[in-house]
Length: 200
Image (cartoon, rainbow, N blue to C red; front, side, top):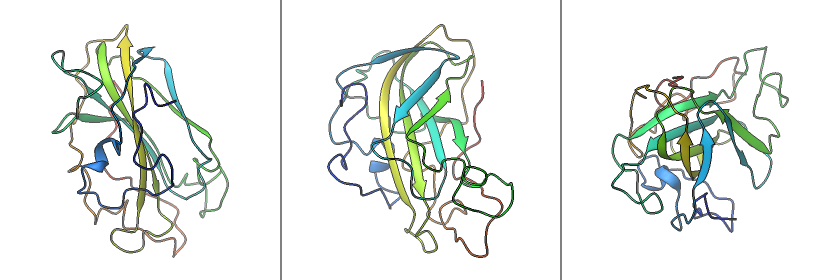
């Protein structure tokens, strides 16, 4: 199971990362990867969740280009190498927040996916997926971030220049509005942490 997806530290539990300054914010990695999946630019890449999304919050996807000189299985992806490729908001904006897909788009998802930008250059990448649980986010450090990284090789890519590039840790602040957040008064909007999405 843990081949193209790097095994996470919580593979036997369900604890998330709560410190945005932790190196665990990169891939929450317990073991290096052992394989690389292949996908063409413009295709949809999906992750199967261990359990359905049951905590309120957004889903976000990042990619980081692996240098040609690096081994994708062990590359740490430190520094400003990550760019955001998709974000599913916590709040849909179709009225007050409720536990259904009309206002909470990620509710009960068991497969989460995004379309690899058509103009992303060909090459090897880490793909980072995160689900930010906001049910205890009314205080600093209360948000719980569940994440993992997949190893992929993108084919048939374009000539785009992805960005802005950010680092994990570093991309988020504990006081970001998307991490320090309360249900009440009932929300009708949400601003996710991190940079803008690069669409290619």
